Length: 422
Image 1 (cartoon, rainbow, N blue to C red):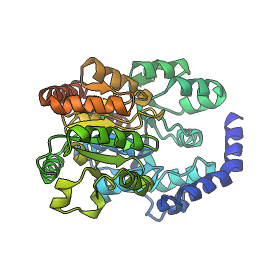
Image 2: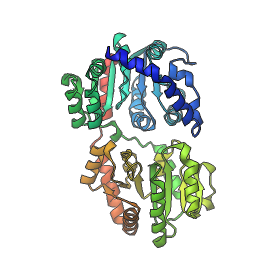
Image 3: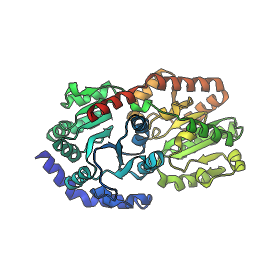
Image 4: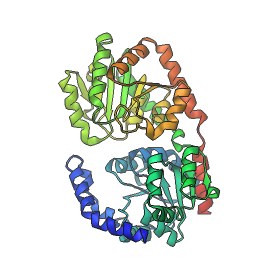
C-alpha cells in the first residue's frame, strides 16, 4: 500500500517534474534533451547480462571512476552507466567514451523502471551513495536482480525522513542485497532503520581511492607551466551562487599584497559561467576563460582564470598551490576535498561541510586543511600561506598522506561486485 501511494503521488506530480526540467533548460539546454530516456525509452540496442552503475550526478561519477575502470581491467563486462544530470552525462562521455553504454536513469515511475530493467537486463544493479528509488529497487527485487548500495551515506536528517515512512522504507531496504557503508555512523543509521547488520560492511569511502593517471599529472604540470612564474596560485573549485563574490573579495585583498597572484575560479554548474564572468569584470580583474583557449601572454598576465570547461577540475587543481573547496561558505554542505588533496596541495574550506563531515574532521586532525569563515579570514589565510611556502607544502603533504592512508574501499567493492556476478 505504501508503494502504491508513493507511485500515485509521483504520477500526480509528474507534470511538475517535467516543468522543472524544462525551466532548468533555460540556463542549461541539455536538460531539455533526451526526455524519452527519463521515461525509459532508449535508442541504444537492448543488452543482456549487463552491470548497471547509477551515479546521481557529477560528483558520484568522478568518485566511481577508479572503481569502474579497475573492474573493466579485470573483467569483460557490458557496463551501463546512468546518471540524472547533464554534467554527469558529459563527464561519463569524456571519461569512458564508448567503453560503456550511457543513458539517464528513468524517473521512478513503475512503467519507466520496468522498461529500463527489461531493456538492459542487469545481472546486478549498483547504486552509489543515497539514490534509494523505491520502484527501481523493489522491481529489481521482483526480478531477482541483486541491488548493491556502495559508498552508502545516510544523514541524520534523511534517517528521520525514512523513519516517518516506515512501510516504504522497509520495502526499499528489503530489496537491497548488500550495503557497503561510507563510515561507521552511516552504517549504524541503516541498522537503526532495520537493515540487517549481516548484509552490511564498512570499507570506507571510495572517494579516497583517487587515481591520478600519468596523463593527468602530465597535463597538470603542463598547465602549471603555462601560467608563468607566479608567486602564488590558488583555486576555488565547485563554487556556488553566494560564494563567488566573497572569493573575489578575498582575491582582491590578496592582490593588494601580491599583485601577480592568480585565482582559478571554477563554478560548480555550467549555467553560471557567464554570470561569474560578469562578477569578475565588475571588480575590474583581468579575466581569461579556459574555454576561450587563452594565449600564453593572456595566461601569464590574467588575475582570474575562469575554469568554464567540463571535466578538467582535476587538472586545474594540479596547477595550484592551494585549493578552496566550494559549497562551504554557504549552507550547501561542501564538496569533496580529496581530489585536490591527492595532488598534495593545501586545502581550505568554509564552515559548512556536513556533506563530507568525516573527511574534513580527519583532514583537520591531520593538519591537512584549514577552516575559513568569510572573505577577510580567507584573504588573511591565503596571505599567510603565500608568504610561507614551506608551511603550504607541509599542509599539502599531510593532505596527500591522509588520502593514501584511507585507501582500499575500491578493492573491497570490486570483490563484492564480483561475488554477486559469480
